[in-house]
Amino acid sequence: MAQDKFIGEMEHMVLLAVLRLNEQAYGSQIRQCLADTVDRDLSIGALYTTLERLEQKGLLKSRLGEATAERGGRAKKYFAITAEGQQALHRSKQALDRLWQGLALRQGASVTVPQNGMEFPA
Amino acid sequence: MAQDKFIGEMEHMVLLAVLRLNEQAYGSQIRQCLADTVDRDLSIGALYTTLERLEQKGLLKSRLGEATAERGGRAKKYFAITAEGQQALHRSKQALDRLWQGLALRQGASVTVPQNGMEFPA
DNA sequence: TAAATATCCTCTACAAAGTAGAGTAAATAA
DNA sequence: TTATTTACTCTACTTTGTAGAGGATATTTA
Image (tube, rainbow over all chains, first blue to last red; front, side, top):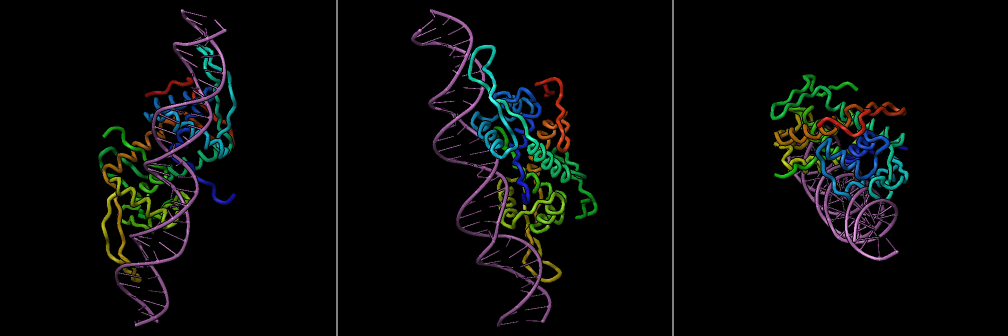
């Protein structure tokens, strides 16, 4: 395995939503979680496509659950993150954190950059 | 302007590299910065395409500079972030931060999730 | 027990972002 | 006036992101 692929931003968010929901991570809940937490409205298709690709890449795994208790309906498909998924998430966060480090960005204001020009700690 | 578009992860990183480099933000330096800081090797084409799209979307602006002082070479194209670019960056970071909040992810270990199930602060 | 209703997932298609590298431009050095 | 260096442009393709109609499966209701 040469250089691991990076995940996209949407994938990043979906992975996080799955983590947050823990035992309750299935389609519509994930969708709801993203809508609530980051105000991002995904269409049904957009979400499931992303979930499927994440599973194909081995970053998520799934199992089929039971039907809804309340009022019928099809069985849920529960998702959980894999070790590989956690690593991908970790790498991605680390990269962003490193780039953000030392930058202070304020809404509609100017930006502070470190004085050392191009040298950043490895 | 309805719901603002989100930026991708690559765009996010390129925007940050431009911020970090400040007055020195042009093609090859940006590429170098990303390679150094986050160990991400972009091909020439990948980088410039991203820069161009970012400019089209109004998140970056550019100006043509002088040629290299040392040993000839073509004029540089300097990039700077726009107010809109800063906002996009800010929104994107905020969304990720919110999703990460309360999650503790350790390399190859299990994951800690908040106990409150699905309730997150708006 | 056959609709009606509710819940949730599959499928197909297309748009946008990410990636590559050969080729071009413009300046200095030999 | 050709070689060399620096840096950007162009074209083509792959991967991600996005959408919503439609299908599957269970409960309720008549």
